[in-house]
Image (cartoon, rainbow, N blue to C red):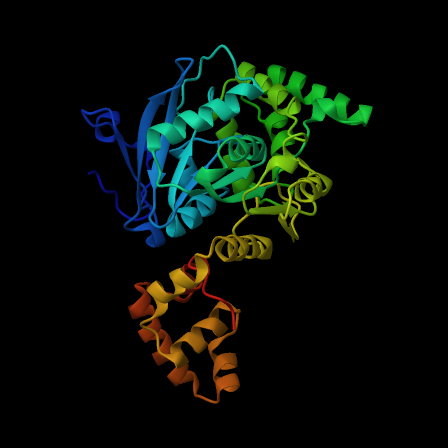
Length: 391
């Protein structure tokens, strides 16, 4: 197994021979930063019922979870992405995660004849058949991945323990009642065909701004680059068109598994009303509104932390994670860590708990040792990733 030094990039920087074993199974080291020093993913391939080669990956430990594919992914690049790595890291920290690149994208076969809606559910079924996660498992769908997850849950309710839908929608843009919305969708498809592959990222930035209106320049540049790395111009246009044709409205009353619907209130790709319609149509669904304008929530957002907490609470994983990772902390250490996660300084913590600044520093040193981290910022991220609540 190849291991890289912390913060070492990989992907195109790692020799191909180092990334592919003789068995055809791809081992991708992902210890690029302190919080993933021991985490790795394994990439494998499976052939679908219509003979398309799909790339899927397994990572993490814990209860099984399957994530449906969505726009856009690349199993390797997602690990180093300032836009997506916290998603994969969080899910892998708490679950045995299965995910895959959809047909035409990422490490999956790029040249395919059909990318219609019918293949979304078929490909999800084929990946699950290849990965064989223990049943029942949690199923998470982001954006259009929600449509595939809904249909899978209707077909196989006995296999799904929890259904989690984020940023999903009931009907695609081609079925929208507002003709302006339909015109906008058609224009995006045409612009994709014309401008996707150009060196100048002006068009791609137009799409990026809709996905990440509150992203910084580094995050937007990375998403621009992901577009080029993940999919061809012609395939991107076909995928956008297929998104517009989705309709799961008739399936919603038939969903019989516990369901959590989470949606950003300022989402420009899938409006809040779509998430509300999902929650309204699925019997007994829980709904969580998140205060964000990003279709892909970023790590620094309070909305991201709320989403993580909602997922852990909904799946019942939170208490289990806390007991395993923080049982070594004393009651006072847990109290101090809670204040630290809440944004307090050492002086503020000391005043609140009636202890000296030096005592706080000494306590934090012991907390860092027990959690296996080396700094204040690392402890905060580690605690949040593991569902440690703010006190």
